Image (tube, rainbow, N blue to C red):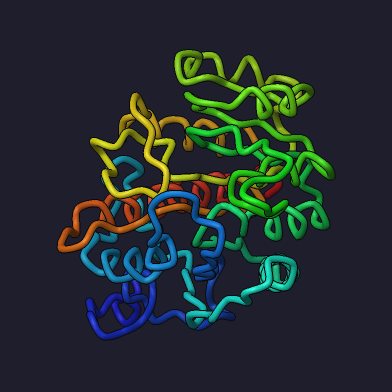
Length: 292
């Protein structure tokens, strides 16, 4: 272990307080706290910094893999003040993600609301991604929601216009979304064990992975913009993410819609750990020379 990179400094504004430079790193954390179409409980703009702060209390050694995933190098970009206009915001996200991919690094985007995934998916497509795989309680297949075509509730619909879409963990939908989702892959909550079969024609493809954190049950993450009962447990979420990474070539990823609870740290820590576990699985696959 390079101890110089693990100083446990709680002052450093970076994931895990790591002090790797951009050039030294294989993973790049992008904070983009865009929040302009929240339809119920606001606060997702506070998610990225809350995750970064909580990550400083994680152990860097991962018991499951027996690795120290941080050693692959994780760099955290300075916090970005997001554009207000959705089209300008999506363009900026696309440029940020594209720049990281161009440097042969893996972008890890932290929202903000799910809308930011549209920009990330556009960039991922430019670098060979054929599908958008989302873990989400909602389909997000509205054509327009509350007057906006770029609402968080329209994310899957917008992305389906230029890329295959699969949504895993769905447990609620409006009839309009149900109709609009025809032609895409929808895995309901009660079908979770069948997700691999349902996505069989995409196995091995390059994809963008999106984790809308309301896919998890409110008992695990109680403070979310649009919580929905009967969600995935922590173990189910981690297992599904691991399976996706093992069966697809994930070129980029995002974690969105987390609204931290006031005066509580366990929720932010859980999200930070999920991100670190995801990097652990992904970096292990990359080291396996599987063409990522």
